[in-house]
Image (cartoon, rainbow, N blue to C red):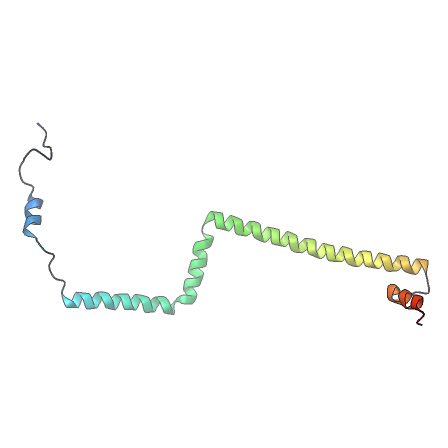
Length: 126
């Protein structure tokens, strides 16, 4: 027959030892002081290494493939947006130049900012 938990069998030597040990032995004071000293040292080392901890944390974040992929895509979209803004500004300047050229073609007496001068002439100012 197999030895089930309900069938008595030979006593386990570990059970005997555990039965003899009723309480945990008291921890000597020197060990407690050493543990708290190590905890204090670890906390002070963490505070002094905070600039390096920032870079370690940054490295840890970028080591995740999902975050790194999103970051690269965000940088790409930012670059596309800035390029589009630059092209848009250049197109606006070109359109303004074409409008000034057209205005000069229609009215050669207009010099410089034609819209301001035309508006001034219409009001009767020189």
